[in-house]
Length: 531
Image 1 (spheres, rainbow, N blue to C red):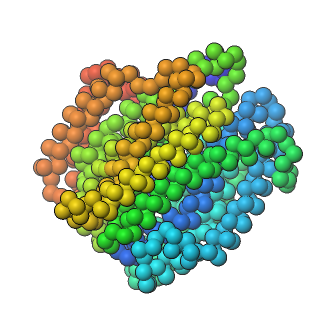
Image 2: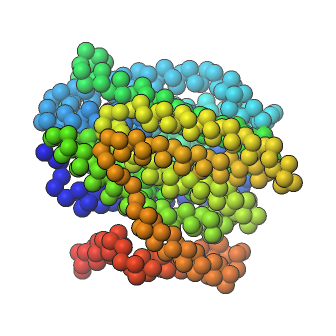
Image 3: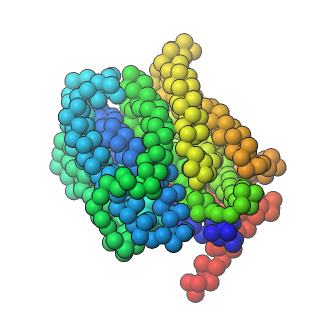
């Protein structure tokens, strides 16, 4: 028996809720980054804050949403599907207690060993820049612990198909940082302002966790303080957690290797890389994470005969791949053709100049190489987690990280000088090399999954139509770009990206792609409901 009768309609509904929540939080994040760029630009203080934010976020990412969702949701959702509510509540409470204990210890250790972390992560930082980074990391660590705990709330809410609140909660975190910058930005120099911003981040982390608690407590019938290691469900969560932890760990190591290599490049490389990654993660989150997050609890609840379950999983996977590709292909093309317009609209203000926008564009274009592979890979990975296989994605993630580290070093440091290129562009080599390795990982994930459930993937004709639509849109957007003055980045983006979107969706309608027809119907229903 399958949990849903109409997988495509259900997928669109749940993914839309996740995407809407993510969109709101990402918009708040982009506003935060724009305000940050106004006060910090691409400076030593900006480098220090961006690097510092990465280090405690390692804790959040290892114990946060991705890892906990992959290990906890399949067990918890399966218990709910069997109507074993008391056991589900006991598992949820035990996981929270275990997570709280481990997080508290790691936060304490992290604060104590921060100087050694800086030496390992950003050895290129010296003097006052290094000291500022140390102070910022120590401030940020407790906040990262709270964000990791909020992932437990997300797991509960998602399992009950309550997607919206958990993905809009980060708006509060971003809002507290924006308030900190606006209130104190005009009164303090960059170094002390960075510390104030860090405290604003901690306050936002606490509020992000707190805003989800009322909904969670209503869903849990009881909460017993216990580590629960004698319960089979808890032991299963722990067993699943370990390989996912290492899988996320090697991915995080890859990000830190990028930051480490960037720290040896000229001033601004670390901040520019962080800016590009923020934009790169927008479509990954909106279209990859939204579909994957919506699908994980549903896929984990599938029951029945093996052939029946495999056919159901194959149908949902292929539907999800199409939905992701419809939005991610034009996103990648926009990064290639109009990256400076996108960067300028978000960051070009105050200390952040037009030249900085072009610099980040080059880095963003490198990221675009692997954008489609990364987002599709998210859904394949969720499928493995739903099947309670956390080892296979770990193997492929480790291979990708090792290849990315080696290729990234070559492309970032020795290659640009050898080709007579300014060394600061080595950071674009980092993102491009990661993109190529992302495609290798996707192929491995897809091939292994096909051995289990049958043929999966995107039809070649469908993908070709998407790239044709995106190419036509890029030509229109480039035309709009040439007509506008680049010194007015907001108006430039409105015209150029507006023409890009109109042509893309218009071309998709000409090709009669079902995805755009579904989108048009949804908008039409929304308009009718507002009348």
